[in-house]
Image (cartoon, rainbow, N blue to C red; front, side, top):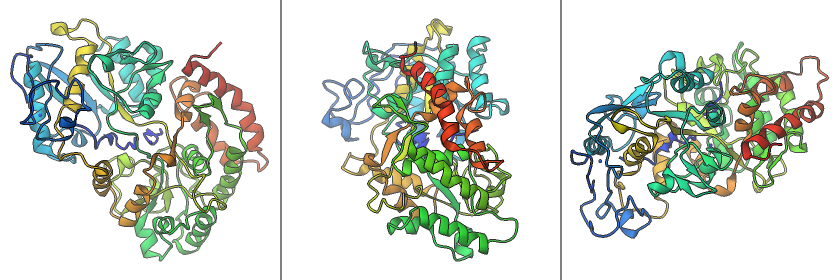
Length: 515
């Protein structure tokens, strides 16, 4: 299923939660007994700690950073707190294959948090029966509805699953933006506005994501095929200001003539490619500002019409709904959709035996200055909390949140904050996943917020599909036949007009305007 579309904004996400969240998380060690100041900065311990007000000047400097651990005054009596993730090596600093940064510091901080609460924190991989998508949604939901106590207290999820979890009560409410009350307020945490929008249902927030939203909606391509067959490099074309629709289709046409028999120039999930192209042309499916669904707008219709031709001429027809097609991972397809989260991992893109690069979707031909170009940001990896009122040793959802927040946000900064340091760290994170400097430059060129907008299509789709992208008229069910155009006479305008009211009703239920 999608990301997870691309987990599905790395979800970049990028981290997305260590992906988008992972490259911004914290990490440190406290005294036993659950009542610990938790200072790990070594200076300026007087006054208000950073855990109470992180916007103080001292909180931008590792030498003066201080953090009060366990404000809940909880004594867990060595109970275990499980954080469900996948893969563990991206999140657990004690994993021998850990891929994150500051491993030793994160190990020390992890131990300090454990000592402060008198608990053991364990990162646990989701089991195979909860691999992703509907199976993981069901697994987490059953933890609540069936009362399974061994399925963890903290869940790494895709934010576009939240509306489904809310219906079943499977995750805890973290904050109410109307009343200004909740765990965020209790522990002085302010979440990025884009993340607030993508994790909220009717002004109630259910997901925890650190840092700033980063786009994670790109085209991915086989760099080895580009190099070996002397094809124009998409990222280089982007950096030269030449990556538009004509350049894209010309490359597809050239690749078709050069690639070996049995290969394809284009692949990817239809639902995602349509969404990426619409945004690159300045369009939206759901306008959060106007509170309107624009599914049948001229920009969407034209993008579908253009992609129908691409599908007919160049697409890997064997790929249906899988996030990354098998022909791409075996080196037979040039382009794919996907997510930064899975580059150089053993799932989705892995184990690919070739270099994979990424590039923004091509601009419209008449958009020479990229004035219309956007990247959709609407889902990411984030954390959700188990709903519990009175568990072992008095554990409840508020205490679980306090543990998570201390673990993620409490580690002192690596260096004194300077202008541009966030982008510097993000570039380092990209280098862990992408070998091509041209590709990294292309992605870094669109990190300015002017290039991306909040897109809630994925969330609305999950609502239409009653918790799945593959039921009823959910987007992944609906989008592929649009491009296949089996009989050759399917009208995108007619089909999009038909489902527009369905999506309007689903969106109204999310924002609280349903009749």
